[in-house]
Structure formats: C-alpha cells, structure tokens
Image (cartoon, rainbow, N blue to C red; front, side):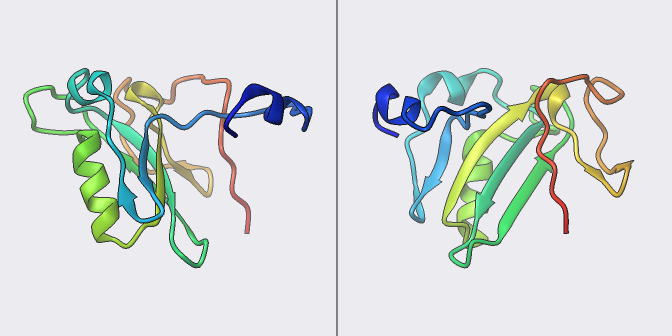
Length: 125
C-alpha cells in the first residue's frame, strides 16, 4: 500500500508490520541506519518467500553484542539472498524471537522462556 486510504478501503481487522524490508524482488534493500546500529547483533525472526511462493521462516538466537551470537540484519539479508529468497522481511526479535514446531520450542529464547506476545504466526499443513 502506498497510502493509508488504500488500506482503509479493505477495512482490515488485523494486521502485522514487517520492518525493515530486507529483500524486494530479489534485490537487497537499504537498511535504515537505526536498524543497522542498535542492536547490532540480536536474536531475530525473518520471513521470506522464494519465486514459487514457498515460505522460509528463520529464527536466530542468542544475545551477545560482542558478536558471538544472534545476527545483524545485514548478515541475514546476505544469507537470504544467497539462499535465493526473493522477498524478505524482519519481524520481531530479542526475547520475542521464538520458534515452536509441533508444540515444542526449538530455539533458546533469549529471555530463558517464551515471552508472552500479542501476535503469533501460525502455519498449518
């Protein structure tokens, strides 16, 4: 959407934001300065799609600003591009970066346990 009125015409009930955009149409986007510097390395959650619309959900874990864990957005952007992802978006990170598969937490949330958050993405087969 390029303006609020286009979105309002659809009368949405729920929504989610994806910022910053990491890849668009197969090209790296410019990551805003504030997203490049703080935090540098952090747990992150990103979602992307391939040209055949298959989704990739990637969760990095850890929280060590000295570069020993987590990831920068630039690192994720480069990795996603190498994997052939076409469009990719940064979701929430930090203690919210969690991945649950078949009822089991498969990463180590930086808070030590799942953080209560108001928005979840659920995928069913």
